[in-house]
Image (cartoon, rainbow, N blue to C red; front, side, top):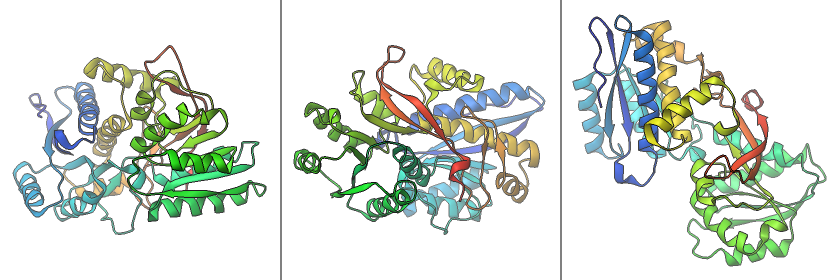
Length: 377
C-alpha cells in the first residue's frame, strides 16, 4: 500500500500492522480502509506543498521471533516515523517494545479490546486507540442501576477476566442499588457446545435482569437459543458486546424487546457532520458500514496528523510528549489521550436494541450517553 507524495511535499512514512487476511478476525480490512480514507483526507487538505502521508502495510501475527525479526527489517528499510496497527493482545507488548527500541510512537487497536486492560508494563511509545474494557463494565453497571427491577443474575466466562468482572459488578452496584438482589452467577467454560443447561439454570433463577459478558460469537449462540425459548419476554438482558456491529448484523432485523447493548460507535444516531462524512466515505469505498476497527484506523491517522502539526515528525520525543495529552476531532466527538496510561477517553452509549427500516440490521435506540468524562480514574 503506497500513497506517493506530490512534488515538494514532506513525506511522512507510517507503518500499518494488521493480521493475515485468513486470520478470521474480520479486523484487517475495516481497519486498513479506515486508515486509507483518513490518509486521503489529510493529503488532499495539505495539498502539494504540505505534509503528505505514506502508508506502508505489513501483515502478520508478530508473535514469533521470525516475524519480529522481519518487523525489525521493515523498520530499518522503510524507517517509518509512526506505527499504527490492529494487533492481537499477545502481540501488543513485544511489538511496542520493538517500536520503543527504534523510537517509533505506535497507536494500537487491540483486536480483543474487551480483554486488553493496561498492565503497567507498556513502554512509553504505546498509545491505545480503543475504548477501555473498564468503560464498558462501568456503563453496564450505571445503566442497569437505573432499572426499577431488583432481581439480578450474571453470566461470565470462567476466567480471571470473567470473575473479576462479576466481582466488580456487585461491588459497584452496592452503592447506587443497595436493594439489588443477587440471585447468582454462572461461570461458563471457554467452549460451550450446548447452552440449554445454562439457559435452564438461568430461567430457574427467575431473574428480572441478566447481565452477561460472553463475547460476540458466544453471545450470538446464546441469543439464538434464548430467543427460541422466549427468554427475552421474561428477562431484560444486557450483553457487554451485543452492540458490536458484527453482532447487530448477525442478529438480523427482528429483535425481541428487552435486549440492551453498549456501543462505542452508534453512527446511526450521531448527527454530527464528521460522523456522516466518515460513514458516507466508508460506504462509498467498501459498500459496507464502518465498524469500531474502521473508526480506530481512521482516527489514528487524524491523531497523528494533529501530532505532526504540533511536533513535526522527525523528533520522536517531542511527538510522544504531544501524544500524551492530545485532544483531536473524531466522528464521535473530540477525543483526548489520557497522559496517565496513554488510553483514549472514548465516549460510550447504552440503549435497547431495536428493529428499524433505515438499516439492514437492528440498531441501539433510546441511547444514554456515558462518558468519556464519566470514566476518568
